[in-house]
Image (cartoon, rainbow, N blue to C red; front, side):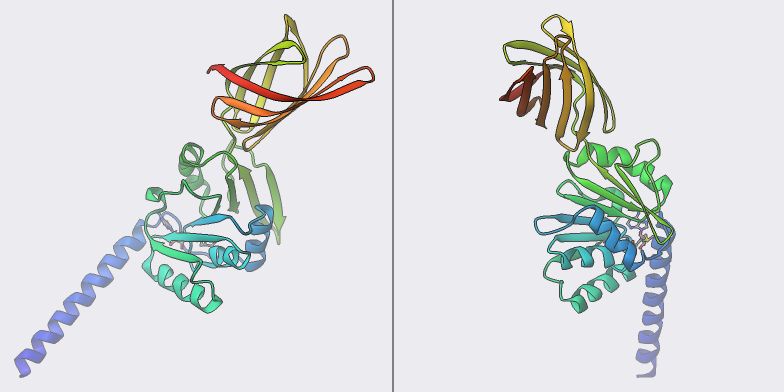
Length: 274
Ligand SMILES: C[S@@+](CC[C@H](N)C(=O)[O-])C[C@H]1O[C@@H](n2cnc3c(N)ncnc32)[C@H](O)[C@@H]1O
């Protein structure tokens, strides 16, 4: 009996040691230590991204789950990923206490291996170096129009669409831009247009010809999948183009103004080459 008891005790000690060692190894793998975002900063992050019903929110490195739980309180659905199982258990318990455990899930895993392609909103509180490592993945995998918000850390030379200060903390907000690079063509008001676009992140430069004449471009803006700009011909005719980029097509409207006349036309542009 004593021997059996001794064996059981030894087995328990070995199992505990294995569990502690494996936890410590995983903790060492963390790219970022655990520091929670203050609740008022969480609110500001969800406000700037305008999170609400219909959104799918993913927090990369979700800690105690507070961001995804707050997003669920605003009607969103989502999940958090954290490499630390202790944090994951805390987050699951916090979701239960907040009464949103039917809308959120917390997974143990590496944020660099997670499938984030279905998110409409990505939230993060990581580090500059981790943000920079994630940047190409975000731009490659996320759909145009997906919103990203980061507490404290920016994304290098990808300038934020908005930058807030909340209680002396930084909050950065971006929208994944559509890929507009290349040569586009369309017809408006009987004119043949061609447009060359160069692009760096959300910043675009447009070079446009109407017929054989170059036109002056003003106020070019790419926000997610929406593009808008004004093109003015030398003779005084002005066009305001506004549309949605979907792969190799842009569809929207063109306002045409000439002297006292004005009209609205459907605008469809096609990508000829990248
Ligand atoms: C600064 S905390 C942010 C927690 C939470 N997002 C918040 O804002 O309150 C960073 C979290 O990322 C987790 N983490 C670090 N490296 C990770 C990785 N490679 N994959 C997933 N989670 C990671 C840590 O365990 C920690 O909980």
